[in-house]
Amino acid sequence: MWAGTVEIVVWCAVLIGVTVVSISSVSPVELTVAGLAALGGAFAARRMRLAAGVRVKGVRSAARAAVALPYAIVRGLAVLVSSVAAHPVEATVRRVRLRQGAAAAWAGTLITASPDTCVIGIPRDDVVLVHALRPEAGPVEAAVARTGGRR
Image 1 (cartoon, rainbow, N blue to C red):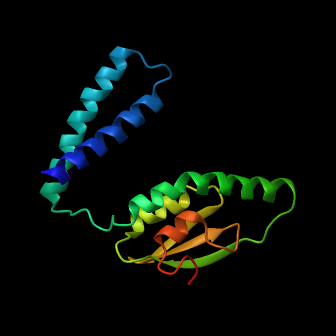
Image 2: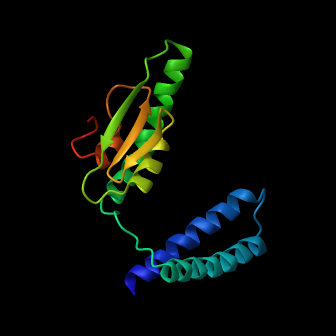
């Protein structure tokens, strides 16, 4: 019951966020319609997931990675601006072995959210290939990696 409620709330938040970002100016009526449509969409998404038999897994490290994300974005912007404005850095490609409880789908999405990193491949469920503008692992990589980043 609790997991289902959390899933519906998350779906609602995502769907309302997409709607609000897509609308240029948001009136109370538009926000109400977006909320009701998102609630219907959230219930439909949950029912579809249950009907397909898909289980949500690998979210144990997600909170730690999400907390590190704002710092990773600011740091990534600084690295990107420095690389473009001052001196180009040598990019690197590395394998990041994910820690137990981290799924490649959401971990790769969070790693890619930083402007100086990009996931270019997922060869296995517990490994992502990362193209980065810095040699050391960023905060999100450290949060989801098995030993702090490189491998």
